[in-house]
Image (tube, rainbow, N blue to C red; front, side, top):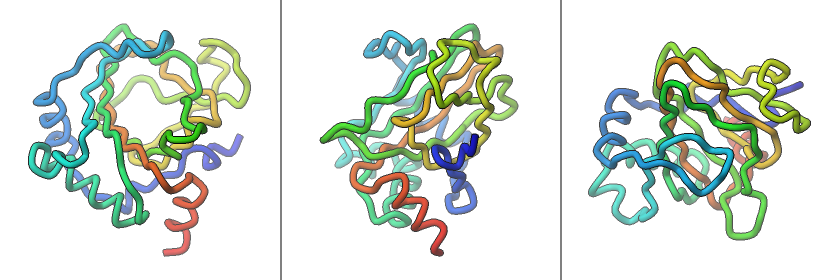
Length: 179
């Protein structure tokens, strides 16, 4: 499987401090994500993009870099935390519907993660051993077209997700490749 059809590394295009982003997320506060049955994670959400610059300057710096790179609109911005003993069940994100974001930028904030994001082109339940590792640091992610999940972790995993509203994954990859 060619994972670059779904996950395209852009870490060389962004500058950020993982520790500072985690600190800002902790300031927002994590709550249990209850909106999907497959999600056993906690999240810290920023829905109001007009307050990002004032309230979350570190996140705002990353947001501005992505908006400038792709000439796009960001929102929402979500930090996810997978606690020890939790997983992110296999799913596809419901993004390919009108009014939803087109793709996202995912930034892995924790180092030395014991479990990778896993991909499968076909639904196979939570059989993570049969799935392909998808290793990234900061990447464009087309989560609506690939089955993905994170097996039960033995080390806390935190990642940041900035949703792109008006540029598709393919358009964003083309922009990166043309520079």
